[in-house]
Image (cartoon, rainbow, N blue to C red):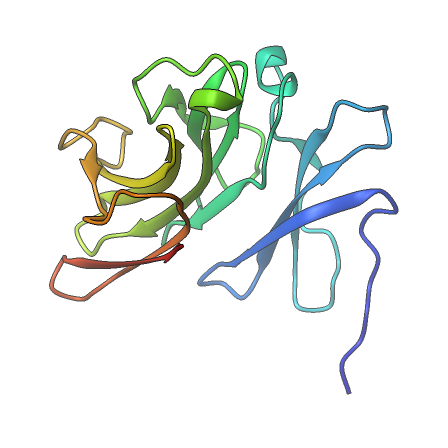
Length: 196
């Protein structure tokens, strides 16, 4: 019989990821402190006991708190590290990697999309991760370009880009959004997205 647990009374846009050791992490947006959302991250074991202390995703990064923001993205590494990403209409498109305590950065915050993001007119949204077999990872996202398009980029485990941004969709009229990406055993990956 499934059980329900409340982790926040003001939370929205949750994302969840599992780890090889059986624990899992949840990230969410919370508006309890006012109109500007704050992003939180918590790790749990299978009994829903907190494994690590709650972590504010954007600690030290005040710029990530302003403007229009969307759901964060998470990716687990086999060693227990956790990649986190979030985007913002005022400050850009960020990703970083935390150790298994969720407190220490092992890869400092980097801008996965290198173009200017200054407003909702050129905002980057809906980031997604997939871990490749060699330890690199691929990210996908939606970028406002008059309409909206899907882009992808491969990064090394240290966050160094391996390739330039790649436009995924061949149909560029209207809206392409909400991408998801999965890695295959041969090192390739598959991207799915909504188009209308």
